[in-house]
Image (cartoon, rainbow, N blue to C red; front, side, top):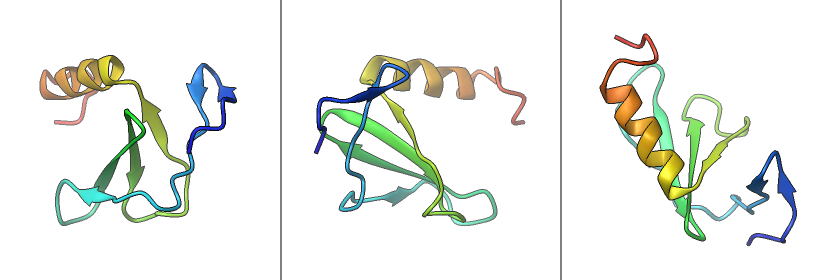
Amino acid sequence: MANGNTVWGKPELDLSGADWRSGSRGVGDVQIAFVEGFIAMRSGGRPDGPSLVFAPGGWRKFVLGARGGNFGLT
């Protein structure tokens, strides 16, 4: 649950009970979870590592950018 504190403008969410879903099955697997109106993303290979947290508008921009090849992932 968000405790009202923020880090770099993002809420501190309790992700311990999040329902993480994988986008693929392989090396570099990315997992996402929807928590309290935000979208969290983490590496499936390092589930105890850090997570990125997006507001819905930021998530949309990120996904569109990734699909458009803006991050050199192709």
